[in-house]
Image 1: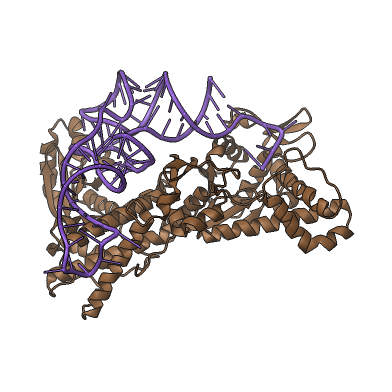
Image 2: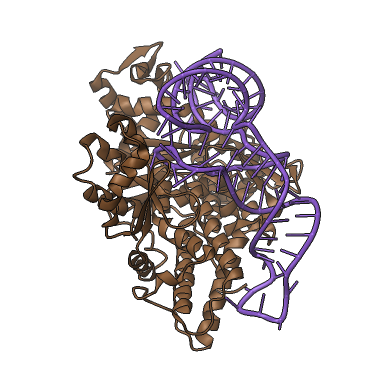
Length: 551
RNA sequence: GGGCCCAUAGCUCAGCUGGAUAGAGCAACGGAUUUCUAAUCCGUCGGUCGCAGGUUCAAAUCCUGCUGGGCUCGCCA
């Protein structure tokens, strides 16, 4: 599908080539005019009025004739206080509708492959327990962002970083061991900061059932590594499963342990040494990260010889780079907000490209039930596991509700509303709208009407009501909006676009009859409905939600 | 105290490269149903865009300061 702004800008620049000074050219960009209709507007006259010592309106009038000749233009008007409004030519609009009809929901909003590889890393919760409801927001944002970037032609890798090395993992293992050893009639002390969730005894029982005999026959040290391996696998299986239930899948599950055991830390440390950005102090190895914008230097290797997460993070991102990614977009929760500066300093100190790492932080989610804030704790009996949430409200409802606000804003997730079939539930609204359109198509086919596959001959001039024009506007601006959403990394905007489209469809539906005498108007309306449905499906594809044929 | 995020209608939130009268849903009130799905639609009510400066022909949008809320500041990850 065409990016209209780009297309129009190009034609504007050609039309005005001889009328603009070089420094004025960048100002010749159009945007969608505000109130209704399909006009694209150029505010250039007001921007150049001062340097030209002319009234904006006079400049607009002066440029108008040249623009009137553009292929995209139907009507070009100079209006006060100095805008030039460009109404699209009907033939051009019909061509756009044709492009939509010729596309599948998966390809409709897609641009050509650009050969660049981008990784989106998201969720990446420690494999020391099941996913928490809060992880759902990262799952939704990351998965939709990944698909959104694919529409822009990127080769996207979805990755989950498994933090299966280090002190957290040891605590996890020892917490299970404490339970498990009891079952075996042995003793193992519960670590001070051990994990105390009810899933720990469950894991212990599970491992005991599967590996009990083996555990009896091996020495203590080996027992712990068996427990660690088994515990990790069980937890990861659960995590993978609850993400799948939310419609989220990954291309790679990347192990931290793998990094460490395959010498990536050492490699990166050597690199740091070669670049002269490390020093030894108090028995530890430090990175001079303050040279790269950090507010303090960071320890890379602890006094006890163990690598810090800082070193492993450096190794991990260096590894991503070595795997051929031009960029890594990491999606983190608000508790990682303080990591941005140190992480970027790390990238700089490694000599990675300036724009290699992008970090998206999403703010916290508040859950509500019946208008009351839900306190997430086992004591209150409220659900805290993502899997339970998805089971309660449904996959699509969960995805949609996690996208209800921009990642930068905190989010209120109302569990009751998510289950309701009402207007304040966008998931149902989208589904209902699609089913309604599908029903119209069925009726049209039933009475021998044809569903158009081609719109080039569609007489767009028939579409004159505000409802017609509003729907056309939704269709034509779609690619521009999606490109913007991808560029600014704002997946939630796709949900808003879909809801806006659905609203326009329903308003149109209520006001205008589609199935009627076979006239030019009826044909044009049918094209409008079919393209609207296709676009709705394209948005749903990016959002990862399913739209039913009937409800 | 430092860093980052947020502050827009009674509530929850959108608001794209600054542009023409600041939008949506909910809530409140009033309408539409012999009809292609009323699980819908229309209308009314509702705003000093946190405050104060600045830049600009033009600021919710950009800059500075302030106020309030959130997250975060480990040789944990």
